[in-house]
Every structure is written in structure tokens, then in C-alpha cells.
Length: 156
Image (cartoon, rainbow, N blue to C red; front, side, top):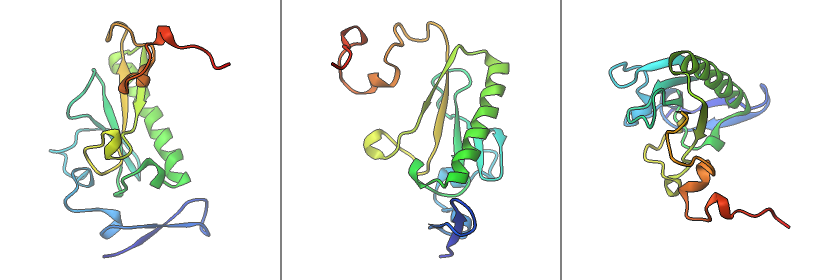
């Protein structure tokens, strides 16, 4: 198994990347980014692709996926985080032009307890539209049981 070194903050700061050649795993769906029959790509960069989600929650739902095999958001280097943000911004502009959403939900299921089903980091960019749910208040707070937004009280 070949190992690759990636710079986190410059040439002297290194992070070890596990996996096969260039951090790719043959049995991983998202490591097969070169196969266009599996991935319809909206925009891409050297280290990431933004692909249309196979099971979209709304018109324009995409996923940002690193080309190297990493499982957690926290496995990205600082350089990769900046590149991911830049590419996600480009994707948002494309989605705005094509679909004109009112807002976005950005999400990462970081670990199986959080609902991750593919063990390769992917960041969801989900366009939101007025009226797509009855009451969007609370957003991601609605994934776990808790008080309704009307019951929230400020901390004392």
C-alpha cells in the first residue's frame, strides 16, 4: 500500500494519507470519480468534485467529494478546506443560476452515528425553496428530538 504525504500548512507540515495509490480505495463509490456513468459532475477542481446527488432532496442538491479517500471532514488539510469552500461557492453560483433557490442547507454526516452511509467524506449542498417544508425554523436542529422552535428560550 502506497502512502502519500499532503501539506496542511506548507511544505513542513505533513499529514499521512492512508489508502492505495493517491489515497484511492478500489471498493469506494466516491473514489470512482473518473467513471462518469456513476457521477454526473457539476464543477470540479484538482482535489474535489461537486456531483449531483443520486437521491436529491430538492432541485439542485449536490455533494462536494474529495478525490482522495478520506472519511471525516476533520481529515481534510487546511489547504483542502479552503479549496472545498471555493468550489462549493462556485457550485452555489451554478445552482443559483439554474434553479434560483431562496437559501441553502449545508451538511456533513460525519460518522455512522450521524447517519453516514458511504464511508467517504461528502458535503451536501441542498438548495432550499420557500414552502419546501411547513416550518423550516430550527433547520438541522430538527434531526434529533428536542423542543419546537416556539419553545426555545434564551440562555439566562
